[in-house]
Amino acid sequence: MVQKLNLKSDLGNSLRSIMERDPAFRSVAYFSMEIGLRESIPTYSGGLGVLAGDILKSAGDLGVPMVAITLLYKKGYFIQSFDQNGWQQEKPTQWNPARELTQLPNRVSITLQGREIQLSVWCYEYIGLTGFPLPIYFLDSDIEPNHPDDRKLTWHLYGGDDRYRLLQEFILGVGGLRMLRDLGYGNIETYHLNEGHAGFLTLELMREMGYYDVDKIRDKVVFTTHTPVPAGHDSFSFGLIESVFPKDALDTIHRMMPDKSHVDMTYLGLNFSRYVNGVAKKHAEVSNKMFNMDTVDWVTNGVHPGTWISPGMRQLFNTWIPGWEIDPTRLVMVLSIPHKKIWDAHQASKMRLFARVLEVTGRQLDPNVLTLGFARRAATYKRADLLFSDMKRFKEVLETGKVQFLFAGKAHPKDDGGKKLLQRIIQVSKEIGKEIPIVFIENYNMDIASLLVQGVDVWLNNPIRPREASGTSGMKCTFNGIMNFSVLDGWWIEGWIEGVTGWSIGPEPSEDDLINYDESQDAVDLYNKLEKKIIPTYYNNREKWIEMMQYTIALNASFFNTARVVREYCEKAYNVDFRGV
Ligand SMILES: *Cc1c(COP(=O)(O)O)cnc(C)c1O
Image (cartoon, rainbow, N blue to C red; front, side, top):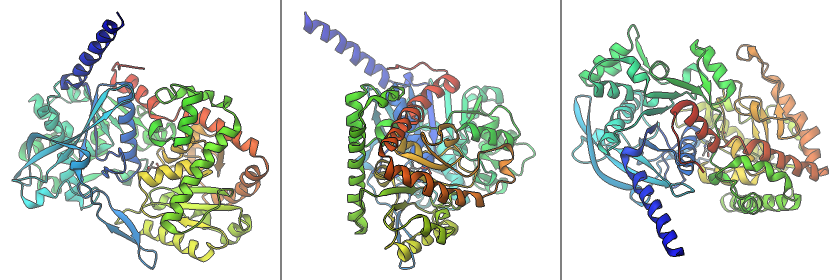
C-alpha cells in the first residue's frame, strides 16, 4: 500500500529530526564574535560576520552536526548617514530580538570585574535545504539582576574601548561554552574559533578538565585566522586582564602565556589548536611568514549560494541546472544556457538595483550603460578612492555617458581615515556627478549588498596588497555572472583568468610583495584596462561579454561557495561525517 510506504518514510524522517534536535547529536561548535544571517538581525559589521552566517547556512544545507554561538548586540552596529560636509554620522540600529529570535529560559553565570554576571540566550534555528535544523545562539547580558554596566556588555558590536572588548570576548569564550553545556551540548568534539576573539574558550575547557594539559585542549580546538596584518590582531595587556578576570581564569592564562606582557588572541588560537587555516592560499602564505610557522593551511572562503543569487538567475538555474543550490559544482553546466536568457536575467537585476537607487538617492541611472560597483568597509587599505587618484585621466577615459559608478560602505565609527575616504567620494560625486554618474548609496548592509552584487556589470576591488585576506563580496557577484576587476590579492589570485572570469589590476603577486610593491602602477593599469578592454567589450562585443558571464559562473561560483568551504572544513578540520545530499 502506498500509504504504508509514506508512513514509513515519514516516521523515518521524524525520528531523524528528533535525533537532529537532540543537543547530544552535535559534535562541532562554531564560535564567532559576529554572525550575519540577514539584514533584520544586525549582529555583524562586515565580511567576518557575513562569512560566518554563510558558512552556518551551508552547514545546515549539508546536514553538518554543528551549533554556533555569538553575542546579541541589541544596539546592532550602526545606521549610517552624512552631514552637509559629507562626514559620516552614526545612529544606533534599533531592532527587536523578540521578533527574530526565541529567548530560552537557560541562565549561566560568569564573574568579571569582581561581579557576578548572569547570561541569557536567544536562539535562531536555520533550516537547511533538506530540512536539517542548525541552531545559532546569541548571548545576552541585559537581564535582571545584573549591574547596569554589565547589562550593556552585549549591546554594541565594536562599540567600546579595550576593556569593553575584553569583557565581551570573555563572555563569548567562557560564557559561550558554559551556555552550550547548559543547553545540553555534551558531545562537542571540535570547537571552531572563527578568528581569535573567542580564544578564552580554552580557559573554560581547561577549567572543565580540572587540570592543566595543553595537548588535551589542542585536540579539541581548530582556529581560522582572517587578518594578514599584525595590527589587526586583538591584544590585551596583563594589567587590564588582571583588573577584570576572576582568579582561576587569571592563574590559567598566566600559565598559558609565560613570559608575555600581553595576551594576544591570535597567539592563543595558534598555540592551542590542532588545526589552523587562513582564508585563501595567499593568506596562508602571508600568515606562515608573519607567525614564523609552516603549518597554517588554507580553506579559501566562499559565499552561500541561496543568499546571494538574484531572483532571476535563481529561476534560470532552477530550470537549467536542477540541484545547483545544494551542489554548486553543477554550475559548470551554465555554458549551455542561451545567452539571451542570461542577459535578460541580468538586466532585470540591474533594473531592480536602479529602482532602489532612484528611491533612496533620487538619481535615475541608465540600464544600458556599463555600471561598476564598489562596496565594502571604508577601511583605508581598501582604497575606495583609487579611481580618483588622477582626475584628468579619469575624465579622459570615462567620456560622458560611458560608465556609471555605484559606491557604498561604512567606516568604523573611530576610523577618521575611512571617513575621509567616504567624504572624498561624496565630494567627487557632487563635483563631476553630472558628467560621470557617481552615486553613493548610504548605509551599506546585507540588503544593499545583495542588490549591488546582483545588479552592477563589473565589481571593482583595489586594496593594498596583501591586505585582503580573502574578500567575499566579489564572490557574491560571481553567482550573478558579474565579473571581477580586481587587484591580485586574496581569493582573486585563485579565481582570476584574464579576459575569461574578469580582469586584474596591477602586477602579478610575487614573493616580495610585502616589502616593495609599486602601488602607483595600480591606478595606471586600472584606467588603461577600463579604456582598452572593459568598455570596448561591453559596448562592441556583447556575445563575448555574456560568455565571460558564463565563465564567471562556471569557473568561479562553482568553487567560491560555502558548500565547498564546509565540505573542506569537515574533511580537514572537523573530521565529521554529515548527512550529505
Ligand atoms: C559581503 C559583505 C562584506 C564583505 O565584503 P568584502 O568584499 O570581503 O569586503 C561586508 N559587508 C557586507 C554588508 C557584506 O554583505
